[in-house]
Length: 243
Image (cartoon, rainbow, N blue to C red; front, side, top):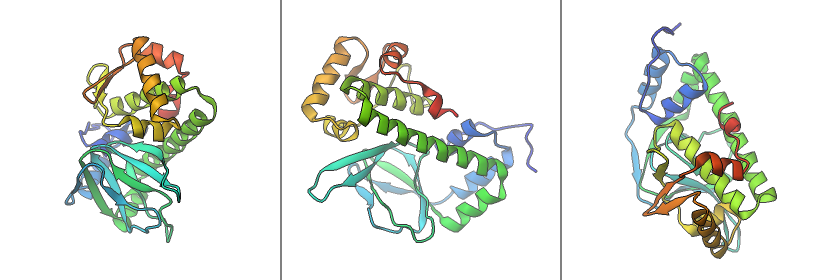
């Protein structure tokens, strides 16, 4: 067994995220670092790099930047089904399963491509990594359920405010929040595609949140001056992000 008496803190977003779900030994962390020590794939903003219907044979991990999951309707309408942040798994092969969504970069991104066999071997061989990955999977499922509740039950202000709280919490977990603010590269059109609102409704809702002193959005930086108040107004409980 690895040495559990001297846990390490890592700046790698994947390792940092997994450590929040399960204590990792130094050996676990070194194994992950070796696994991720592969040439990065770099892509420009608004580039689609995983497409619905494909069968990618590699595990893809977002190392830097923002991306999103997209589902396209035959008439060209789009639904953003999730925002992807550093440390997130973009795709993990499972047999002959096809992608049922596309992945698009929202900013310049850096992707870690890992052979599926090597990835599965390391996580199967190390119980702490397997547990951390399983908890991560549960969190992803919980996020999807909250997005479903947002679309089905929340008002426009609650939808957008709850999403802002969620992103703040997720980014803070990997050290990407500066005070109360963080980089926010999402356009109003994309925000509408994620929340089921028209751009006009998004604009009106953002103005209302600003007027109430709950957000400050300028130059692609989003600040939450009163995060506790915003959480209360939008019924945000971070428990689903920290099981």
